[in-house]
Image (cartoon, rainbow, N blue to C red; front, side, top):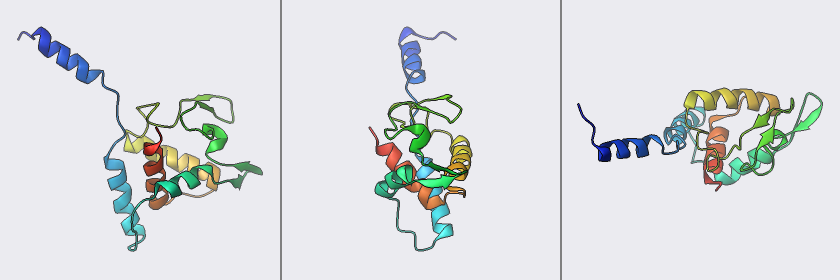
Length: 135
């Protein structure tokens, strides 16, 4: 089978498109939120932004998401071990929030580290709503 130059160019263009945040994430968290709270009335980017900057005391230190990811999620961050973190915002790092399994892994770890508990589906959906709006 012979591929034309046009077909090859189209294929190359599609393969080079940046990944986009998984639109099924919010649907997934919406279903979970409804199970956790039948009175669930939708996600709020404003609550997501507050969650991102909310401080808590963990291991004797004051922490928030901004402790590692910076106040501006479009900027690179650093872990407590000084490892570089790519910007959290999908507008800057298009591979962020594309894989539900990875998103869940990092919510599990980071919510436990910062808040000493699991985040609710409402909180996750609020956060995703906000971070997707950061341009």
